[in-house]
Length: 326
Image (cartoon, rainbow, N blue to C red; front, side, top):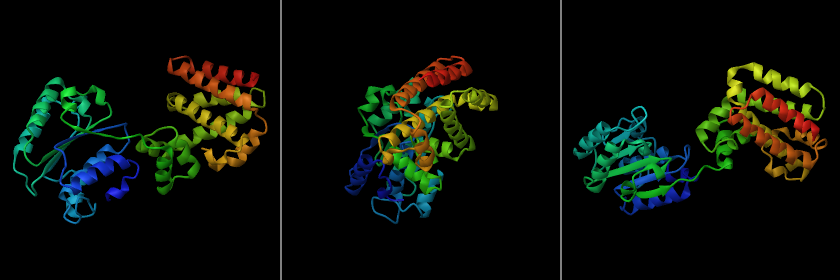
């Protein structure tokens, strides 16, 4: 692993790499960005780059030092996570005591705090004092998804490094490199910007089953009979998990209807379900553009109704009937 592997966050990687190369690493950084953007991964790489004996201002990822940091077993690198719902003052006090000790293996010590926005008021005030007078050689890497929830006085003592959401293309490429079929990878990558969540989705049998049900339902909606209603009934009878995943089912339905529209306007390069082009071509012949746009609006409305605790079966049956009415 080297800095070149962080192409999905080029600005953050360039800033940190150059700071390491020039010996100008700040004493405290705040990595701010959405879940799954790679904040912890980059924080660990910063730590490895400070200690790795094989590379200058970078990390090989393979040496004993890098592997110990990755495993959480390096004496000069400390990772703090919330204890239950919050980070407590005792954790910050223990951190301060640990960081005040002489570094074991180099002139540096690094601490990484995940979800720093979850600190109690007492813990936040204690950390603030520590940030105001940091021991020599100590580097703080604070990670958050909610920078607005952090004390302004803490923010003012950190160099803020913004992390952007991963693009759908980046997530899909990574999933395909791991062996996930292209169509499933692209569908998952358009559901979430979190690589780990997309990985879990794409590797689960029920995700593929939901997509198959979407394809079946769209086909049946144009038959103008009760088949689509039977499909809805069967869907809701499968398991309680299916009921929990109805927003996901509706997201997949929106993506599928949009793909039919893309086929009609000859934008095949934008298809999400690219592995189902033959099916999409067939369905594109029986749907009008107006029906597709209206259908997408109806699905979005149904998703909002279900998220507001409307009866799921009635909401889905209503959706089917409205689509069939045109």
